[in-house]
Image 1 (cartoon, helix red, strand yellow):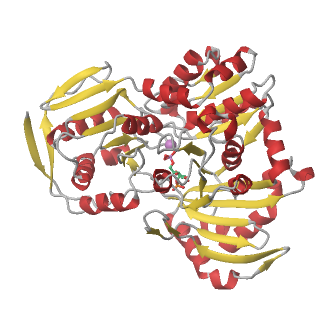
Image 2: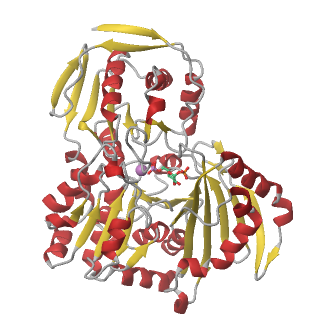
Image 3: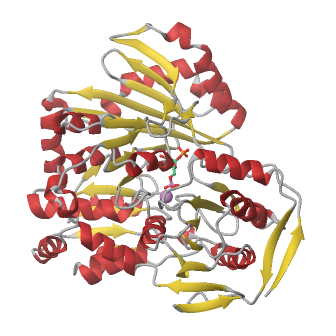
Length: 543
Ligand code: VG1
Ligand code: CO
């Protein structure tokens, strides 16, 4: 095997965000751009000789080219084996599953989650460590630092590997195992959930519709829902992964998954609907004419976990990201288990799960998961819900309303202002910071501000501190307004406003969240001067 050492110069913008490095495809197509970042990963992790790596992605445009490059670089950097999903496909949860099951040194996931794909769309790359989870900040910071110094990278001269046939291939001394991307993951799901009960549910005429949004979950959902659980084939929609996701935006929310929403809110709607995102780690749960917020979903899964074989022995604890509603906290209290509040991003859950402190984790951004892997897991959440529905034999809506009647309802919404000028977004955040003193104790109609700050987190396991994780305005009655800038976008800035209040009155539980949160929304707009500063009079997306 001939190895070339290629001289290169640093790019200054290779700083990983909330979840890996994401840029437009043409940025990654620049000479040396991908190679620099991959070499920076290899230099930082310093894997021992002959280590094993997992490699795959969400099927988006440029994945295949990137995989060929990364394989040649892995061979030149002394890896002994790379496990690749057939066709270059691995959902993020499946990659996490493989890293753990085969005890590999780590994995490289090529994906940009819910961001659009195609030649002008987004591409991304993320490194996961041996526990199967996204590299923690100290590693992503080190990778970034290395990318600022890099002077050369190593790459083998070799033919491209046939990615579409399972089997073993060689690049010099390194083996490439092209694997079935679904089998191990599907087996893991089967070990956690009562597949027999779910099969019975479908047999009884319960109808489900799953929208893979032309992204990676198509083959996974087909194998699990149709082949193993015997749901009818027409339970699936948009199930063939496409490099540009069919021109869509593979983000499972009420705006971008409108095709599914129309089915579930239409005439003769199925009993249950779900969608997943580009890389398969998110989930949206719908009942007939009913939407379950991700924050409620986490709380409901926790409250019903005893009905599911994999969780029957009890939960060690729950963790949620700071902007996620406190619905799960109420369940944790009732169960007598701890509830942790972390910054946004799944990487913060890893330590808690590794230390055995939490079993379930969730984010308001349609992410739910457990310690079965170290990523959020879209299909896992779907199966968890189906398992609960199979046991309780009630509708999704009834289960949610009963949950609220018991615990109260944390009324919740998120308003996203996408692609606004970075200066306007920074201006809003600065204004808020500058207003902390003035806001403290301020009265807005019936609501009084108890505290405002910029959230920071001390990891209870390794003591690491993460600051600047979002502006919180907390009111004395438990209501909250959070402002945060997205760390996953590639164009302009995205400002997220998270709004939450608590409603104990059952008579109000059926009311629309936007209506119930109107006062809080007004306060948020007033104190942020958002409309004036961004020129926008309404959010791009409401979830
Ligand atoms: C968003 C979500 C966050 C999630 C992250 C990665 O980040 O808000 O909760 O962990 O995406 O999700 P941000 O910084 O844009 O708010 V995904 O499905 O990449 O893997
Ligand atoms: Co995702």
